[in-house]
Picture (cartoon, rainbow, N blue to C red):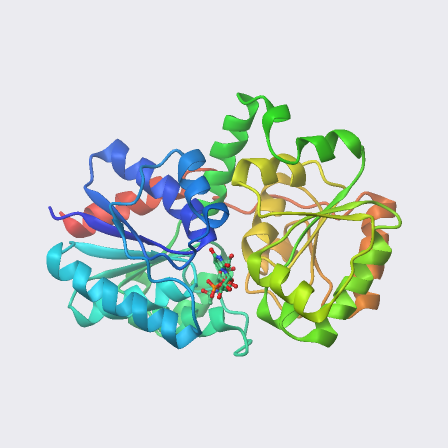
Length: 364
Ligand code: UD1
């Protein structure tokens, strides 16, 4: 059997392919890791490969940077060349980033089967680049792996046959549980940010990078004001994404002395911080799910979520981006210990095994 191409390009992709790599290794299924280069700084990529326990990429396409069209087009051109040299039996894409979209289109036009992991999520918000990536990828894939019941429902409503839609749980959670286990065997004091954890007995953790939050000055300034105010009650530790760092400087925004900014952290270093945070404030998709998986209270600074199970069953509160609403949600979480939740079905560390079992059946 020719190898399955596993496509990874931006930070959250690396965590999602890691358990698939491990499951394929365990079943002796051939694979190749294709890194598009969408994220290129060491902090944003190499460091993840090292600690996720997966081999370095087989192919690095170096197609990062630039506008959406430039980035997507460069990845498409590079991947088209790649599959001429190394024809896979299938292309597997994860998530909703530009690399997901670009490689799915190229593979499909080359008559290769396409598998989409984390399929069917919908925010209903067409201003979100990821929503467009999700819709296009799901419109052309051949097999779908959903993380939550809403994903299955969307795919069926959009006319997919139920034989090709599989509810398997979440590879992001597989990886999280794997890393929690690794963390137990690691001297946490050696991790970046451990000094902050030692210094502040109670703190919040923040991540923010969505264009809708950080590219518009007024929206960003409003959120910065809310974070500044929350940090009067608990210090906030905030590893800053390059896009966010650039716009903080460009707009001259000041988070005040109690918001501690760090460079982007490795997965394990950040896990060590957020798992013990009093509250997590974020606009990330993955962190909404990871906090639900570990029962940590989460406030999502977005108007919508494509991951409703984290609100319906988990610890996530959708606050929106109005500073008053963020403050109110934080104040509730900090005074009552935060929202309690339960872990969704199949978020049990075995999603990748379920996926690989289905792929084996398809490719034999
Ligand atoms: C991308 C994904 C987003 C995901 C996020 C995780 C899309 C449409 N967006 O957003 O869904 O949540 O990754 O981090 O695919 N930059 C660097 N160094 C890097 C990477 C980026 O400096 O290693 C800067 C560059 O200025 C770049 C900008 O960040 O232009 C944005 O990077 P890009 O990959 O386009 O999107 P993200 O905002 O990271």
